[in-house]
Structure formats: structure tokens, C-alpha cells
Length: 217
Image: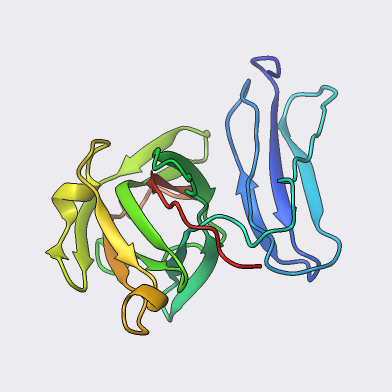
């Protein structure tokens, strides 16, 4: 772990130069990102100093094998005009054990009255069992505030807000198109926004649940 007065941040860029993942933790914390590659070529990591001065170490881990990857829902964020894909959120576990994944948003969510709009859509080939979802705002001083989840609507089960508020055994299932007559199920989420005068450095979406499926390569 870095010294308590040192704060480095981390960003990941795809071969086209698009920001795909980032981590903005505060002083004394170790930043890391996890992203499932969606294009071939040379990816680039950027480490930059937010405060302090020190040496750093950098490590890249790649999963073994060349399979299609774990099953995952796809995250979309509304930017005021459209829902923008943030990519797959990996909660794959073949034994049905819940996994927790943190994803720093690349798209800045647009305030729609007093709500931020987020959508989870199941990958066509998989099924996810979603336990809890949370959204955090990272403030300018690197503190994090959880934004309350106030609405969660499933196309079949309707209101699933009670299922997604807490980390427990009460889950919501989302079916991919291959398991649902050609249509992947989505959950429409709404979170309360920050007060208008408070600016966020970034946002982190957290999902807990599991998906036992392996997508074909």
C-alpha cells in the first residue's frame, strides 16, 4: 500500500484512445481497474499524480486461456441524449458464489430532474442473478458518497427495488436473448443525484451477484 500522503490515480485506454476504465481512490489507497477487452491492439494505462511524490509499481494480470470470458450483464449510462454502453460487468462464478465488481463510470451521468439513469442489460448468451446494485459519487476531496437507489424496474417482475437494495440472498434474474425468445432482459435503475452545487470527480457503479455461464469464444 502507498504512504498515507501519496495519491496516484489510474486510467485505462483502448487502442483507439478511448478511456475505458479508471480508479480515483484517495491518499494511501491502491488503485486498480478491471476491464474485459472488447477490441484487439495495444491498450494503454496512464498513471498520474494527484498529490505527493513517490515511486510506484504497476502490474497487469490476464486471465489464463483464450475462452469467451465469464457471463456478465452490460452496463449503460444515460448521458442526457442516449444510453451509452460502459461494457460488461464481470460477475462470473461457476459455483454460484456472489461476486462484487466496482466499475468507475466513463460516461458522466446526466441529471434528469433529480435522478441519474442506469440500465443493466443481460448478455444474449447468459443469465445473471443480481443481488445488489449501488452508485457512488467521488467528490473533489476523494471522499465517496453513496447515492440512494430509488427505482428498479424489470420487464417481467416489475418493481425489483426491494431485491436490489441489500446484500442478501434475495436476487433478481436477468435472462439473455438466447434464454428469452430472442430478447435480452434489462433492469432500469434510477439513483438520486447529488445536490446541484456539489460537483463530482467521478462515479463508481457497484454490482453484486453471480453468473455461472461462459460465453463462447
